[in-house]
Length: 330
Image 1: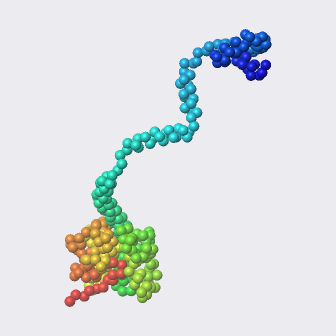
Image 2: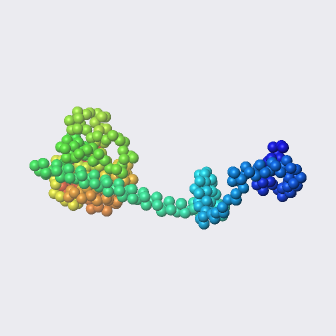
């Protein structure tokens, strides 16, 4: 008997054949004694192995389906999960509204309007901060003026001499530094004047260094040694130059943002010609917009000259290189 016949007999015993094949083989077994003998041997073997026994019927657990789904979801590859997440995120994009040119024009107009409102406010805020910082510098110098006057027998402030290398209003800065009354040269710089300052590395000369200079070098140093501020030129009494003494007057100017000869009324250019901080003898600082409104013009004497005051109540502030020339009136 062929191997294929034995396979068919085994399938016959186990009920694994198709109905028509099972019926055909049953007819052959009935007519062939050799097949009947063979099938009896197979029956004995199948019985010993227990292949003919029917398995017990077992009911599956009630949560088998749920646990299976959870296990499948947990074992799902990350790439699949990411793809599914991306698909979920992209689904709403299909219905998203696209911006038109009209929308962009409206947005641009809104930005322009916001800019016209915001930028001036930022600029004004920056200007106010610079004015305040400049005022703090002047108050610091004012305290140094007061300390200097306390060390003088007559209580006078530092100021220029009538002749020589120290005959310029800006000499106040080397004098205060020489006495150790001001900490650093930066104290003589106004934050608002940084962009127009010709010498970025500002350093006033020492007094002995100033005394040794001559010619063009002396002129250049006198032009810059006062920093961004102008100081008092003093006044004339009986034909002699006098330095103002500390009487703590609230109307007498001893320091200010440096006046400029290129501006109307010699107003200062430190704050883009919007005004100037002035330091009064009593120590307070005021930001002045209109110089003509003041009872005493701080940048000219009563005769309108850039020269020392005509008396002790006529305050005149000169820029660093201004000299205390005595004007003799007819």
